[in-house]
Amino acid sequence: RCYRSDFAIFDDWCLANNVSPLPAAPETVAAFITAQAPTLAAATLRRRLAGIRKVHRLFRYPNPAEDEEVLIAMRRALRAKARRPKQALGLTKELRDRLVAACGDDLAGLRDRALILVGYDTMCRRSELAALCVEDLSPSADGSRLALIRRAKNDPFGDGRDGYVSRAAAEALDTWTRASRITEGWLFRRIYCGRIGTEPLHPHSIGRILKLRAHAAGLSDDIANRLSGHSMRVGAAQDMVVAGADILPIMRSGGWKSVNVVARYVQNVELVRLAGWRG
Image (cartoon, rainbow, N blue to C red; front, side, top):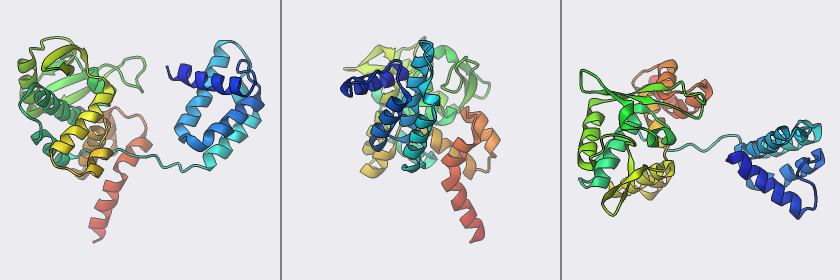
């Protein structure tokens, strides 16, 4: 979908500038990168170029993205941008508990309470959390659960991983599933006028739920606006660092394959710890 969307943008730009989009000349792609650079994030700019590259390969055309003129245009564009990405506010245990306390006892409140607790425990991405099914949960002797996260963006072949669901989160899940009468299929579903839908929550809805519960908890607009569907994942990683966990267990718990990504999430926590030791 991203490739299709990005190439459509390139196609429209080419038509507006009276140049051919397919096959595209290297100077055309370089000019497109230069025109797009002022308004796009670095990651989006790279994805646009990847879309152009992919479509040319699919049609067996020479790849203009490999030309030196395009590479120079991309380097020039990236150097003009700050590389530090924006990071969602971590929903650490303290914030998590405040949001959970703000969830009512209606259907939406029961669902959101279970969603927040499970999202924090499993360190799921929002798409993984929305895709959880009743059949993905396995009970443990102590009342906790194991959740099978079947697929992730860095797991295209569906090897899957196990996520831990604490007893408190499992109890919230049980309360939600009893009230909603969900016995199979999607675990977290849309609610229409007090009725449970058949479709799962859209991943984008998870960030909106967190913001809604943050406002209900009396948190500031600044905190609410910085929360996203990624916040539970970030906050759980930060809490694991505070608890003394090493980087490899954190990576395994959250399904990360890059040390650099996890290090970026927890770097502020590490700085605070170091400052405490020096103090």
